[in-house]
Structures are given as C-alpha cells and as structure tokens.
Length: 226
Image (cartoon, one colour):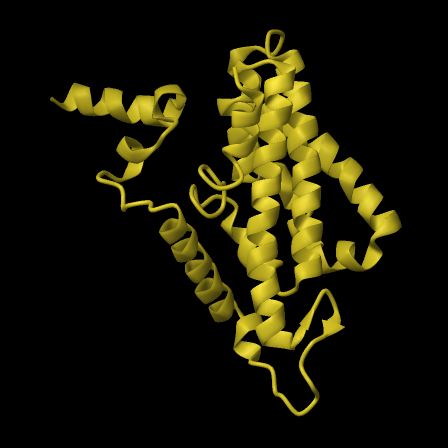
C-alpha cells in the first residue's frame, strides 16, 4: 500500500468537501472568516487522525452490530478533548465556532472515513488517510473563508486589506455569499482536474459503493423487485 497515495488523495482527487460534497454545514456556516475556517479545519483534522488511529487499533474487537455507536463514542471523546483545548488556548475561535465544534462528532467526513477506511486498514494507512482528508477539508474551508472574508469584510485573518473608503460587499459573509463562493471554488477545482459530470448519480456513482451498507441494500432491493 502506498502511504503517500493514501495521504494525497484527500487533498484534491477525493477532497471530502469539494469532490464528495461532505461536511457542507460547517463549510457554509463557519467560513465567514479565514480564522474560523482554519480553526474548524484544524479541529476536524485532529479528530480525524486520532479517531482513525483508535478505530484501526480496535477494529477487530468492536462487534459489527454496534460498530457505528462505538465509532461515535470514540469520535465524541476526541471532540471533547479538542473542545477543551480550544476553549483554553483559542477562546475567540471556540466561541465563533459555537455548536458546530461539538457537531464534529457526527460529521459525515469523520464517520465515513471510520466506516470505509480505518475499520478495514492498519494504523499507518489510517493516519495517512485521516491526515490527507483533514488537510483537504481544511484547505477547502480556508479557500472559501478567505474569499468571503476578503470580499465581505475587506480583511484577511483580521488584517485590514481595503482602505476605509472602500465599502466591503457584505453579501459575501451572508448565507447566499457562502453558497456562491463554494460553488465557484468547486467549479474551479473541477476545471483544474478536468473532471467531467458523472455518467450516473446516487449509489451507482459512489466510489465506495462496494463496501457501503446503504448502497448494497439498495442494490439488493432493486434485484428483488426484478
């Protein structure tokens, strides 16, 4: 197994936000500034790596019947740890992230990597996968947050860029601006990677459909209908 390949796939090719379109709630909610985006990305990356390690180590002793509740408990533990750390050392960012920090527990990206990768692979590969997906998520948040802050507030990481007589376009820090910027960033990534629209949608287009319980169930139901 190529550890470098497992790491780099999450940066662009399988970016969880810009390609798989996961984690949309925090992506749109916290990216009003680059600082908030970086804080959320760092927290999610920490939880991704630590939970991947723990789940990979315990994959053989967690009963299949309770694996998802077990994963959520493990992830919640690391979310609590990162919450305490941010509350102590990064209080402004902790307050700005609000409810979206504890909601990392049920983030589709983290649960997805636990189910699809960490529970089936060794510790080293799981670390590379978690780090790559986490950094890819962080880069996506940072790109959206930077654009929204520069155009919507006239600053970047709190540093004023525009002179006082230039009025910022506040629509960029509103929900509509978030959707617009995210769509533009996704379009740019698709253009750079020469990605074409999928020939199929839903479970048929999912790259992880072979190991996905939901996709397998849907396929069995369709076969039964025939």
